Amino acid sequence: MDSIQVKVPCTVKAKLTEKLKKRIIDELEDSLQKVDLELQQMGIEEKRIVSEAAQQDIQRAQAARQHFAIERQKRMDFKEQAQAKLEETKKLAIGAEIVQGTLERTAELKIGSNMRELMNVEVLVEDDKVVAIRG
Image (cartoon, rainbow, N blue to C red; front, side, top):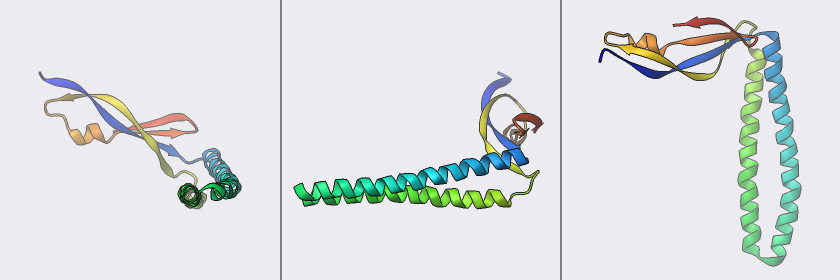
């Protein structure tokens, strides 16, 4: 056998345009608003559930508090990450290349193939259009 077909990763990068930057910022701000709303709703729900549970069983009330504390922390961690990403995005210069994710592609691996060349392929996108394929 002289060759085989293999799946290899392909990095997708986007060239930052005003349109893309605005979309990313809008999505992050929307996510932050949703998290704030969830945190407010959780606070109201926690008070109701804990007070009901406390009337029946102290251990159940403590378990409810612990559950809400864990869920609140998850949302606070997400909020912190989203705020950091928002600030980072606002500082990015138009024209910068940002990683959007990875895809898999099929490549032919032959005897003597350069693995580095096969593995280091990226696609550059600008306003949802492929503008370059780099190898």
